[in-house]
Image (cartoon, rainbow, N blue to C red):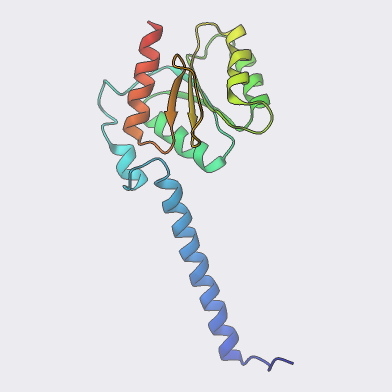
Length: 173
């Protein structure tokens, strides 16, 4: 049988747990913040050329990403560049949002691999109702996309995302 722990030992282990929890939260915050960055902090990346008129836009973007942290970071990136963002965590929710918005979606940004309906299939369904909508696929996996599909490999910086958006949206004009 294990010896009883003293008050000092219990108090010390609680302090260690609190310290470990703070370290974990800091690591998680930094990890999510730098998920798309090349090593800088999220604040550094979000500030990169966000005022450049070349990288700014006013279009409406439907963002579909099943991971909450990734979706939040991408939404923040897009809003900081002036875009109107409607975000969704699933294909079925995104299809409902697209139906409600009608033809008001300028660009769909979707993860390629998602639970349920894949990003490609979802985009095909949406394009039937919004034929002028552009699509940008993003993925952290080495997906094989056809040469005509706009694709951005994760991780990416805010600047890379902004440049790719302008490139894809310019094709529409």
